[in-house]
Image (cartoon, rainbow, N blue to C red; front, side, top):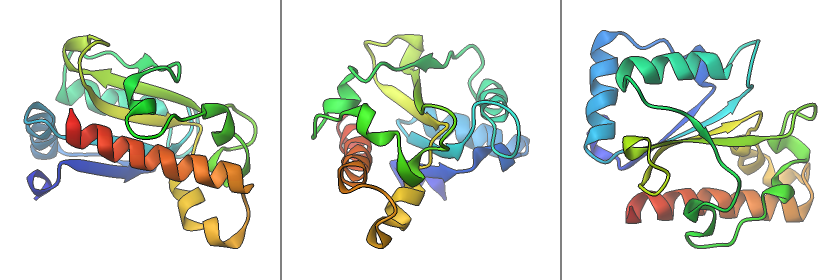
Length: 158
């Protein structure tokens, strides 16, 4: 049951097609303080697009708005100070689009807690998976590990 876990990580949400019972559970999870990370998908087109995620979230949380993040938000400084420019190259990004970060805030208020974060045109999980193989520059790999740590620290403290 998802309620045992304060943080949930989902890869390739473009292939996610929850039924109505799962939509209700998602709503309850978020309203009880859950934090979700969505990763490994593109903004538009193909398998894993952002449009599918936006539609699912609207079903679960009508009226919420995805807001693009600048890199100056507290989540990017919750433990480490993240330099998002270092997360662009290598296996973490898709190469043709600059990664962007999007959030759902409680009550659509950027001064309140981030409930969901989406790494769009990005794949930080793949950077973690292949870090020992040296595909990414060390600085990129380090920054992406720090990004994941920040997500968890933020989720557990907000």
